[in-house]
Length: 101
Image (cartoon, rainbow, N blue to C red; front, side, top):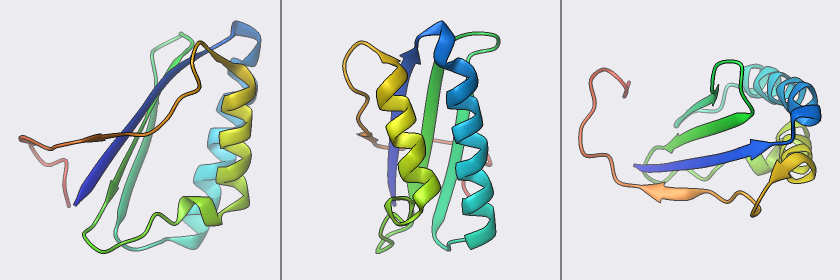
């Protein structure tokens, strides 16, 4: 299992566009229903900070680059991100409670 996190902030005026892109990306993921992934996107309540979490089962390739909506989300984030370009960071899971299937 691989777990990745992306964390970033966007300019105030870009929040609505990023939220809309996230909603469209999740609609596409829900329609495709790929196996072997768990995916979540969070926003700090009322803020401009976003966090994406992606878990891939062993042997599963990330299906998100194959979705046009996910690529549009990535482009939207790149346009509005404040600071360095966000990049996925791998994490080791040390413990969880009901977070995994």
